Length: 325
Image (cartoon, rainbow, N blue to C red; front, side, top):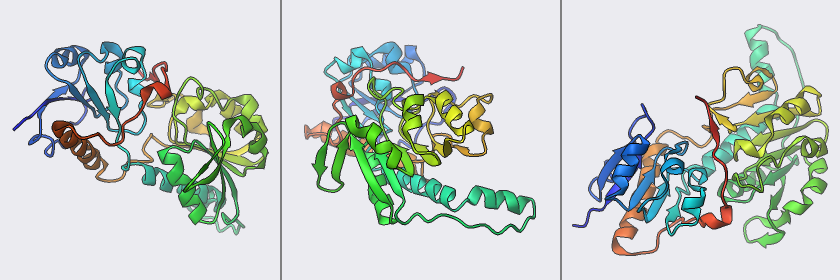
């Protein structure tokens, strides 16, 4: 039986994913360093990028690879000139993290409207302090980025009774989401939103999209949630908007530098929730990602079209995300 060689990138000191489902289908080559990746590429055409934070592909390039499958939805590690302009086929693991991320967004919006962080703090102080809270029914939410995560988020928030407007690259009608507004209309839409949810990928067009000028266009007392990519939001500008009481609160699951440094001022703000890029990670997600890859691997072996192929040229070339030393 044909068993192609498959390279699996695993971070230094990290845990090898559960690859039992891959081993009957392929010969697995686990690599952790740039030198190991270069050596493995001499004899392998397939790469399973298990570590989405890895910079190895940026350092080494695609070599002789013909297909790369990512464990994430985002394709950031592949958006280099050598890979984008190559003939490598790229696919991702859709269907694994979208709904969990949407649930996380709904959860933090409920936390803010029901003032649950304050309730927990008062309990710690043994203080009985009656307060009134806000409804989510009819709350106006602007979701920026109608990709896989954005779509799930829009549908779930609407099911919870929220009034959701969607913003994408261009204005259009979507069978499931209805009207999608153009990014060109973003500045006009921001003042009317109670909550703004960012589900954007990182491209040269989206980098720094939410800076001081755009945050000021949000209405006073609005809240912001980012589950897209950290560099879409200028962190210092967000801090200023929160400290000036222009924005009421923010929930961040992604950051330009990950892990977030211990001295980052984002940690110390009571009205900023810091989450370690884990909104989509349900128990068992690693096995589900491997199952997604194996399904595509079986298609590859018999010459069938792969699922969840991503056009890297449409995403463009980006600078690498910064990481802590």
